[in-house]
Length: 609
Image (cartoon, rainbow, N blue to C red; front, side, top):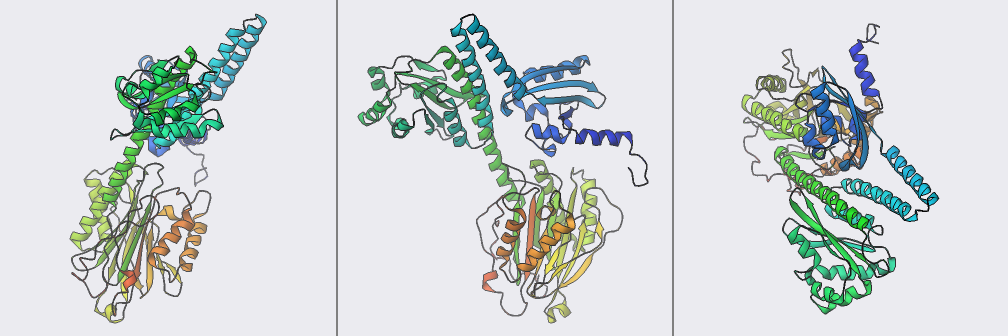
């Protein structure tokens, strides 16, 4: 019901129904971008709604290009007729049934994970085939059907296991473990690093008693392989190499030294098959299947399955390397966006940042601290909506505007927020953000009293806290203005408070205390108790303790923290409070590098900011 008791509009009811339904659904606009995804749909695709919204389907899921799903979507858009398809989607390791129909809002697709049903049907079909074969005394056909079913399951397991990690070595290890013993007695998987170095990473043997011997040979293999050995040959040609009956002459042609041949002898290789790991025109390595004399040559089914598996494994490795590269780029980008804070005389600053995004340490929360020309210290904390690279890019623009306007204008925080809001709209910056801007001031009277004055204004951001030396925690409340990015023309107000010596100002984004299913007052009270218990602790310990207690091992949302310790203005600044250059620990809640104190004592108002 609406606040006046009336029934919600039908459109709102429809949106609520779609949002809450268990069946996955998404809508594609004319440019094949996700214009809407319900939570169930994002979960099945192993993504978040925010990560898919506005993204192109072919860029996000390139493996669907040219497949049955693209054919379905283009057919429905071209004809206007509803249609459906059911197909395997390798990157997620699942079968999906997709139903599509065209509406004025775009191409609507509902889909279901039918993997279990398909596997059940396949197992049922294999069982029926086996019974029919037994009844007709066609035992060979039954065995082939059963083997084919196992191989089909193996291919699905390979796709699922390897795409579940972005670590190349872990993915390769999983691959080797899966193919043994169904495809071979033992297996070695080689990867070629970007610098051209070859490493035998994946290793698996069906006989536990032979594992140590396999490792001993694998440790020697890379440097003892001749150019004519299977792996170097396959890496050079990009084509599989099969030796159905391995002879002593073959071994001598493969292995260059006696030590390696002696290490290979206990493994009793009788047949081998090596396949390239090739995806998108790039060679990632090769894997070798080896059988002993009891098993003999690889069957046609094993070789065919191995070839398909090589393509799936290579694609998974390519995706893992792309994800790793993206993570490195994201980390460098975040370092450039989250600049280290200043360390003015008698003010000690500490910052922390932890992203919510898995795999890529980047997000839309930020902090900032800098000196104005008149010597005041400006503190900023903010949160751009989103948890991805787009949010981080938007955050960079918002942060730069706040910094530039605050430095140039020397206005009160409310005036800075007003100008930033208008600039975001006027410049067409596609971002909406909450922000809190503070200015630490000290006039002659405050300096004589050993006090500092804090002036701040908030644009939809959580109130800061002030921890006094005796453990008292004060919530610094001021009238809250609307978020930035909407062009608000109404008034914005400042708050003002005294900052006594040895007190600590704490600014943070809502990810530090907001939790699903926990009332905000309750979670903020928990934070307040932790802050009070940290009285007297060094500033870095205080920040680390808050992150550890409030977040544990994972964050539901991006988190940024900016803490300021106000040391007494009389006398020397405590040595332990001096700025340090610390190693970056982006994404782990650790400190980012602090600057050298080269600007200390320049342009001060009094002795504080």
